[in-house]
Length: 250
Image 1 (cartoon, rainbow, N blue to C red):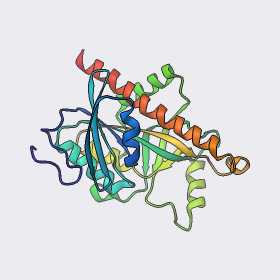
Image 2 (cartoon, rainbow, N blue to C red; image 1 turned 45 degrees about the horizontal axis):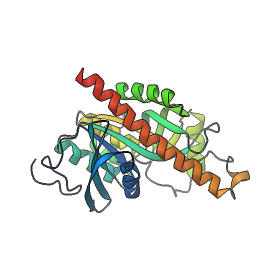
Image 3 (cartoon, rainbow, N blue to C red; image 1 turned 45 degrees about the vertical axis):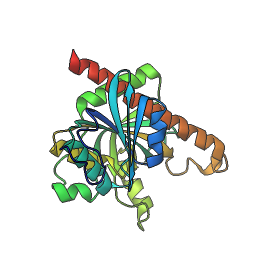
Image 4 (cartoon, helix red, strand yellow; image 1 turned 120 degrees about the horizontal axis):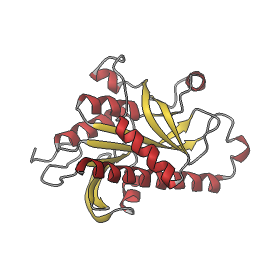
């Protein structure tokens, strides 16, 4: 489509990118820009802030999705319309396992579908899974970079403030689910239905129950760990994209 999409306000005339990074927070778009060359800002409409740049010679779009499944699905649909085929979420999460620390990264191989957006598309018996090749590359590059990562299942949900939050978290923690966010599952479902390649990297910004009790006043240390985790997930995503590009073009 040559005309701009109604929400992300991007068109095929504006970019030839195959890859897009999807942070939730619009402010994080500028954080990604520090890792790119020849950055061109595309502005912001609602929660969708966008820019493009080049990483090791590869064009990369960066588009924020806002918070939650509905706005994430809109971004995925409209990026698909302009020819973007590979989406990597770079988001944040709450840990559900006690071994996970602030700034650790979670590479989601699949997600529990506790969101409403995916259900609007297809029954919950349809899986929410990442592209296996991207997961492999992310794990490979994380080892090379020396990052602390956890790979496995996450849970996506629609609210932080239900009356049963602690009970729900304890339930999924006992089932081995690594972490919780609001966007991974709907992104994987919509992406698969549109024949897109999807991956999700999550930065731990809240530790599991009880882990913060003794360090609640150590805000600066917590902030440093979370900022470092954000930088790590950005670089990890970009390096995996670069390796994927090399394999695709050989």
